[in-house]
Length: 457
Image 1 (cartoon, rainbow, N blue to C red):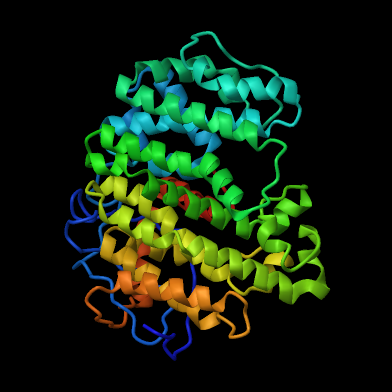
Image 2 (cartoon, rainbow, N blue to C red; image 1 turned 60 degrees about the vertical axis):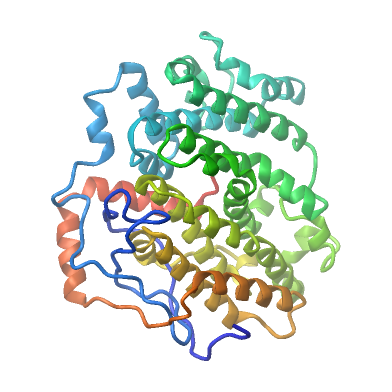
């Protein structure tokens, strides 16, 4: 495809309704292509592919098992129950998707998250001196095997994971050795990387990639190894480090781009100097009104850089077989592309907060349950970005190039048709059903919002 189609694009996303994915094996890399489409509209330019429909919606609260955490409560040990409590306290977003994972993988990923949350809490705590922090980061993986190790002097909001680290490390040691080895290895590598960047700024795009690898790519690699270790996914998923790394880099770069102003207000700088120095003398100068055109061009260049990870994302997702793993991986990725589409060529990034429209998360979470649906979503948001590319933008040729690449991957059949939309009465029925399970709905709603508004490792 050489150029954008002619029609204007419409819409975005955020949070709300609960939904259930198709049964395991029906929505991953090679299963059935059925998926539930929702109301609201994804952005469409010209003809767009239609997501395959099911005959009727399936909801988490109708003819389905209770929410995962409810299933867990009766069977958990006291220490594991505490770990899930900490998971819910420190991350509503990850708590929701982790507890939807199948079998023993659920516990392994829960502990993996809490270990990295504890490590990240040390790294974030500015009250810890560098002399004390660097050795802690270097050695943190060894604390997993020290039953009594804990840290009581943190002032961070998530300090409970350090103060009660013995409970977390106990459950870590209760995991199968194959899971322990993955978690300890990733914790070690991440600790070393965090220590390296404590006082180091990102000058080049290579250093930007390296930083994102340490704080997010390693998470993708570790999760992929856990997926394969559980035997829910094939060994290739855990072995292909490059694809797993791209999964993390795409999410992390999206967070960094979107959070420019927030980071500036607290004195953090994550945009690579190699890029922003083309436009201004200091990174903070991008927020000055007189530099707004250059600021937008700088942001567009970084967004284009991030988009180059999308082909890897699609290849990675196409290999997944287990439905719970597919949902776990796909939902953050489609939300990331929607966020970048909202940010592209948008001056508001340098003036305030770019918020994603409420309700679109519903559509994305309902739709992103199989690979062809994800490809369709990627195609549509790429088309939206395509419609925004200014001919005078310095990165326009590269932006168009990656758009064409992703769209060619997303439409192997070359067939484009419009999406189906549901009537207001349909959504009134959904809202009535949602009210019957407001507690779980609230969890999913907060999860979707945090995917958009927080950047978690």
